[in-house]
Length: 343
Image (cartoon, rainbow, N blue to C red; front, top):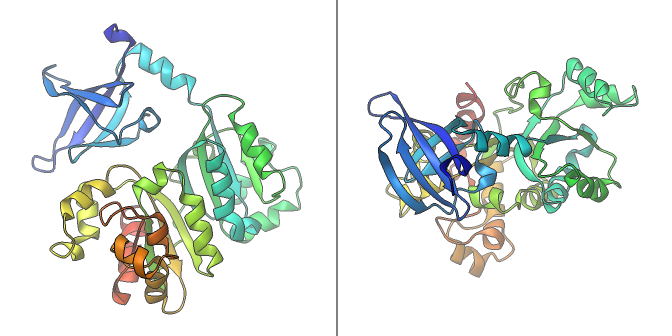
């Protein structure tokens, strides 16, 4: 294949030793193999090898991929062929789960995932009046009586990529009996920028839950979220987060020397986005930890077969969930993810 007809991207890596940004060109092949070339010298940095965690769906401007512990950020397409390919698939939509749909949010996300739509972002927000004006302009709101309920409590925004113009129709059919979802044919940037929303985290009587990368990739987020809400836990904050290695190391430092293959676990946690939840309630750290089940998946399957880790976990490294272990760490972990990382 001609080089101009290959997918190629300019990437940057923040070198933690020098503090400098280093540029690379990544050539991506359809069999999930990649090749890295130094942008300045055009010397091959990494010969073509398979990276199973990197798929075409992961490749868009602003996304991060992990190659041998290096977290690389895609800056822009490296050729016209790639630019055109990205433009062809940049059709996006946002599902707005309104406050009245809070108890059904897991089920709604599950139906969206089952429709084959690629979820790009999920976040819990407080909508403002300006957002309602935008929704009305896009004809997502047709009844002025909806305004009060939309401002009354949190909403959940789910941004998806539409592989083709008719892709959203299946999701609409699955959701037609649910009247607590609004749909707009644009991305989160329509809300005046992706980072416009302050955190909804309360940061007291809370525990951190991280739905790990494999679960997000396998489109099982909705099923787990539904189980958490159905069990009576309050989810007070929600956002998709892609950890840098240093961030994951800071968060999981308590497990260093305790968890075998600690560095492998860090690489897995940084391989693609996780869904972070602030879960609240009385004695919530202990109760939620018991709900998730033992950390060791085999022990969970034997002793707590109905727990989330037993149902969705594969191994200790490829576990389905992280949850806070120590009561005194619940607020600290939530502050780190929902406040420190946001700043």
